[in-house]
Amino acid sequence: MRVELASEPISPDRDNLDWAGATPATAVVLDGLTEGPATGCVHGTAWYVSRLGSRLLAYADSERDLAECLADAITAVALLHQDTCDLAHPGTPCTTVTMVRRRGRLTDYLVLADSPLVLDIGGTPKVVLDESEKAVSARIGRPPNATPEQLKVFIAEQQKFRNVDGGYWVAQVDPEAGHHALRGTVEDARGALLTSDGAALLVTDFGLWSWEQLLQTGYADGPQAIIDETRRAESSDPDRTRWARAKVSDDATAVVCRWP
Image (cartoon, rainbow, N blue to C red; front, side, top):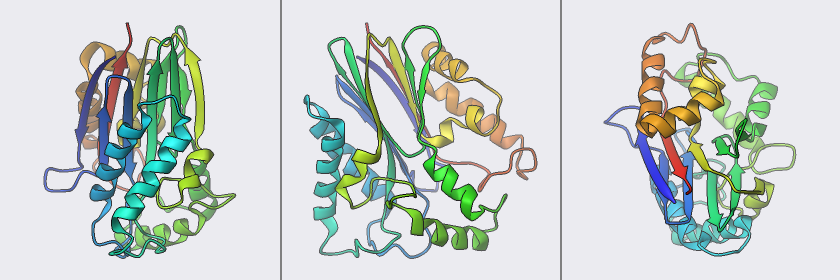
C-alpha cells in the first residue's frame, strides 16, 4: 500500500487535534472534538488522539473485526489515565475514527462519526460518512457563526447526546463505540481517501467540489493540495458570511492510499 498524508492545525500556535498514521496495511485518521473549558482530563485532546491512534494501528494489523480492534484501543488508553483523570466527565477527550485495512483483494473499513472515507471502487466513488452528530446538532439548534460563549453552551448541550442511543457515537471511554460505527468490506478497491471533516469542507460545507474531485486531487497532487485549496476557500470568507460555520478554519488532515 502506498500512502501519502498531510495534516495541519488551525494555526501554527495551536495544538493539532487531528491525527493520522499508517502501516503497510492500515491507515487511520482521527479528529479530536473541540471541547469546553472543563474536561476532567489533565492531558487534553491532542494527547488522547495520539495515544489512541498509535494503539489502533498496532491492534488493527490482524484479521479481527475492526470494531474489536477499536474497542481494545479505547480500553488501553482509558487505562493510561484512569488514575489521574475523571473519565466519567462528559467532556473527557474523544475523537472520530476513520480507518481502512487491506487484506489481499479485500479492504475493510470503519467510520465512526463525521470524518469521511472515499473509496475508489471504479466508477462513482463509495463515500462513507456518519452524519448522526450533524443530525443531533440540527435537533438542538447549533447557532450559525456562534460566539465563543454560544459555542460553550452548545457543546455542553451536545455532550448530553454523546455515546447514547438516539444520539451520536465517538471514541471516548466506552469500548462499545466501535460497534456503532459504519463498517464493511469491499473487493478490489483501487485506493482510498480518508479525511478529517476540516479537509472535506470543499464538498460538505462549501459545495465547491465533488467527492470525485477531492479523490482525484489527492491522487494527482497529493493530500496537501486538498488542504491548501481548503485554506484558500476559508481565507476568502473570513467573516463566515458565505459559509456559516463554527470557526473560520479547522484542523485539516487527508490521507491518500493507493493499492497496486
